[in-house]
Image (cartoon, rainbow, N blue to C red):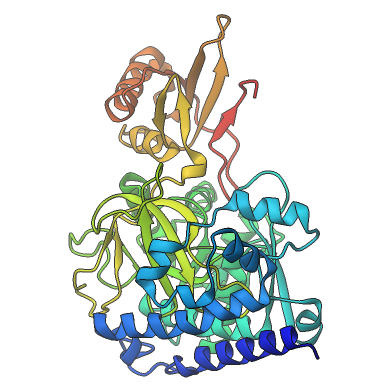
Length: 478
């Protein structure tokens, strides 16, 4: 074994020992309210100390085990000893983004060098390979180990416990089980919690509706758009989703809780509460964010907790990437402190959020995203110099009574080459075309300060969303 491989192995050992040292209540909840009472209610000073201790171990681990990170240290003229804590990390380490990772994957196929999983580690304890979603160009894949699987199971169980998953619940998993981290991470957490699941892949909406009626799951896992679709299918079949056994709708994959009109529509349709996870394949695959019992209950604001003992979260200015002030809207950045394979330093997740460290009524001390997460920077629409997000269009559409669950945003260029937008909306009173078009266009103009065309359609005209909704159709020449 060479001196270099000795250092790599020594730093890996130190990092894994550090991860184990900071796990509490590994296999069962420590109380009715908290899976890990000590960690979930830790003081701000305690959380800071955990982050500092983990950072001290993970920085040399990445330097010795990830060629991507070693090259980055060299490019910026840094050594691991230059990053002695969180302040140094934020001041000296530029944000890592998806483009930089994509270039690394292209230059070093097939896996890239941005993770710490070697072929040897993969052969010894490889668990599963995941792929990033929602990006273009060279796929970014991530090989996670069985150590990661156990870390995910533990942190996700803490999050599901916070969402009030309890003994007696049955979870209906409406997912295709593709190469995405959300469903698999929930699945291993359910194993740890001892909760039963019904797999819902490979069937149509009517078959799933029959499962809801016959087997009476109490929790459904799906995207927000699919929650609406499944509820409507049940109504068409003569069933009432609000009368079902479902009490929680566990949604992710699209903005849902953050869009008030969509959240209210789902909750009224099912007579159930919505809860969510937040994260990404690269740096927050295990419960980056999660709902707590106090979120949007009794008039409380929508808020999503971020588990600070396993990740370091911050927001940055979209243009300069300079850290945003607390309470200021910025793009999410995550340093993962809960992984053998992918403990990224300052990865740009890229959703707009406003972070707040004020105490929460649920008793958890970890920071929250007030208003949750609305608008991923990758989804930004630029129309004639006016910038907006699909969620803003969604808010406008949902504000008009009688609109359907599906809508579509079409971007094109007119005969003169000017960019134009048409929003296609279903409405029960579709025969009032011009009147409704003007009203919906006015709602969009008031929120986005842009004039658009609105096409009002008969209900059922647009394709129903089966999984993750694709609301934007861009027909402009690139």
